[in-house]
Image 1 (cartoon, rainbow, N blue to C red):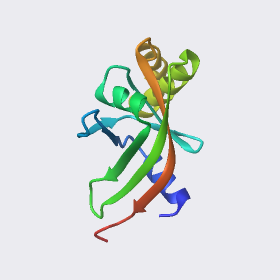
Image 2 (image 1 turned 45 degrees about the horizontal axis):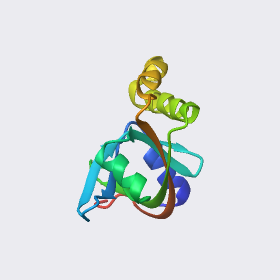
Image 3 (image 1 turned 90 degrees about the horizontal axis):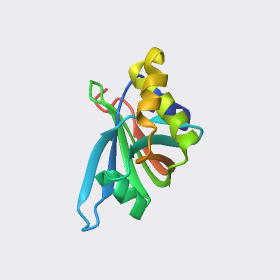
Image 4 (image 1 turned 30 degrees about the vertical axis):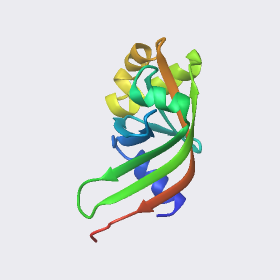
Length: 138
């Protein structure tokens, strides 16, 4: 896929991203997240005390896989560097955008205000490498 194609693919519908981080003891950790694209970056929120929140605070390296599990099967794998923020206005803005994508425009504000609270982190992933394959079985 071209950059334009993979960006359209990950932004389509309500696909989740599977975020891979490394635990302090070296074990891998993978968790699904709701995300949005914001300019060049992929953005999601998580709790400060979650495994991924703690991991990304300690080590900003991250991989995110977004896939279509239906034939002919496609995926995008993003390897990147995360920045972590607790800035309230940016967190609220991202949480509202996440709410709009996954809960619908009518619930976006409600979702955003419920989730942009102390203890939540805004994670912004800047892609360093992207592998994108469309229609693997086509």
